[in-house]
Length: 104
Image (cartoon, rainbow, N blue to C red; front, side, top):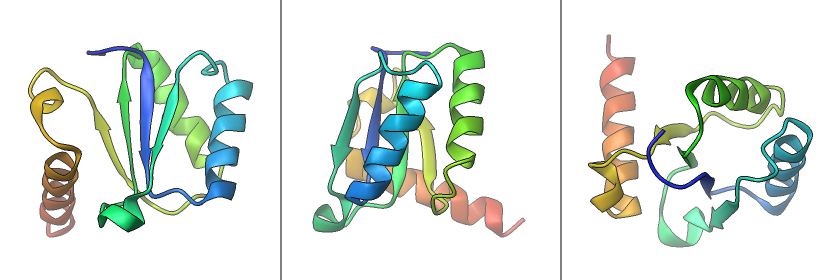
């Protein structure tokens, strides 16, 4: 995947942050920095933006995340195009895509 190895996480409560960090450590992602954004204060959606992972790591990460029982969220992988967007613009675009897919 494009960009440096890491995870940008929006909207997680402190307990959810701890659960995610524990999952990352236990599943071999402890070397990927996790940055938490207070989405509630910024009016942003619950989301994870991943970068620098191999494709098989991405699938393993998402499968491990499902075991945490956290609420549904938006997912994105950093791309050369999206790295120039603000976080709010990226999450807005992801939400529009989610809504369009839900209408199918």
